[in-house]
Length: 251
Image (tube, rainbow, N blue to C red; front, side):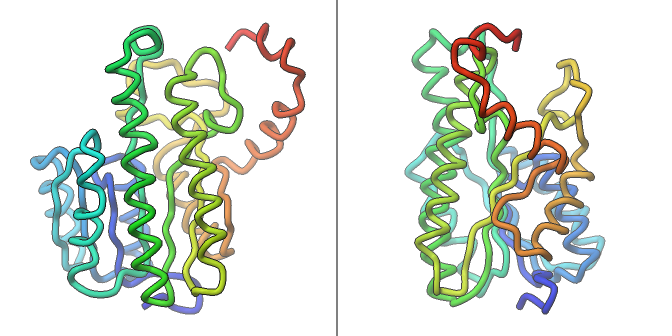
């Protein structure tokens, strides 16, 4: 059960092989997490992460799923809760799309939207139900600053993340009074295997830094966590840029 500082004893991680999820798991174990349910698509990598985590002490179980199969979301979440209460659910499912290849290909657009929005949203609906019935617990959803104001250079990915961000924040409102809640995390560019081969902008971060920000945000019981925190001011300003000017900006 969560302690007074919102440190979870049990966690379900959807997308557990992502670099951010892996870094966050390390922090959670350091803070006393003793049980983890890890779910991801790559079964080989999933078992590697599970073995690494078991060596640190927690009990670990694993689940395999494919986020392009939206209908699987409920059964994966139900399986994650089957072993008992879960204090924290981390939704780290995502796919960084290839904008030039994706934007005019209906199948690639559908895949990007399924992985970045439809599957996580369906899973969150089920997670919210489980947490509300528990009367406690929190879900952390990995969104992105790309969804705060969608840019021409990555509008397929950004639009999907914008949908997930809005969905999660509004779903949180439905949990008012239940003892459960949802926190949205908005990282900037994260130097990781997901972004390998892409040029990092001046304000870039790392999986470890995002994990630190998430843990600190959970202790503050924040509804939205920016990583790094300086992005909050930057994107507040960007929201105010008039649309004609926004269309001409080189990004």
